Amino acid sequence: MTGYNALYTSINEAHETLMHGPSQYKWFASAKRFVQQSRECIGLAGTRHGEVVYDIGCGPGYLLWICRERLGCSVQGCDPLRGAPIYKELYQSLDLSQCISSHISSIQNPLPHSELKYDVIFATWITWIGFGNWSADEFSTYILQCKKHLSHRGRILLRFEESRFEEKLYESCLQQLGSKVAPLCYLIRA
Ligand SMILES: C[S@@+](CC[C@H](N)C(=O)[O-])C[C@H]1O[C@@H](n2cnc3c(N)ncnc32)[C@H](O)[C@@H]1O
Image (cartoon, helix red, strand yellow):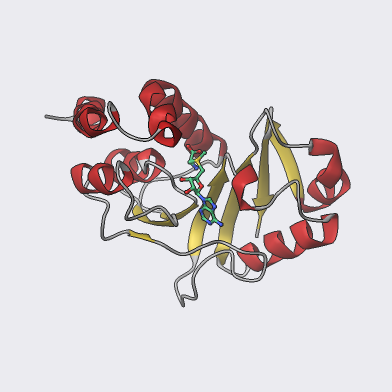
């Protein structure tokens, strides 16, 4: 089995567990929508073959899977729900268990300590981290701390959640740090 069929087959297997699971996991049922969003973000970041990629709050792991399987990237990510139902099954089906840690992204430590530098750091649909609760200074610090993990050609792709993000709150900071590349999406360079 090749290409996206393999991804969707794995997702469908994991969905079997979802059907009678807790309500907070129901959003996974829109797999195609989230796979499509991941593909868009990968494109907006200009992700290239063989790059080293990190996904903060990687959720179901679709973005990492696409980067690895379609672009031959080296991939890592974190999600505090790493061991929880659905996530665990998905990571196993997608062969991502070894790439994802349970690190909790925070202002001072957005990524776990590592000597490795990343070409692309994704933080998509990220209101959960604290955006919206943070001051503009705290938001700036978070981005600057993320930048320390970038390679010289590195980029950060942020995608905010439409329903909760108050874009105005960080507008000046976002203008200084990077550029808007699509609705709700910002690209920040090393
Ligand atoms: C709505 S999902 C988005 C998943 C994925 N980034 C996407 O765009 O489809 C948000 C994810 O962020 C994770 N998360 C919440 N707080 C986090 C934190 N402080 N650090 C890392 N991940 C976090 C949640 O467990 C959840 O899986």
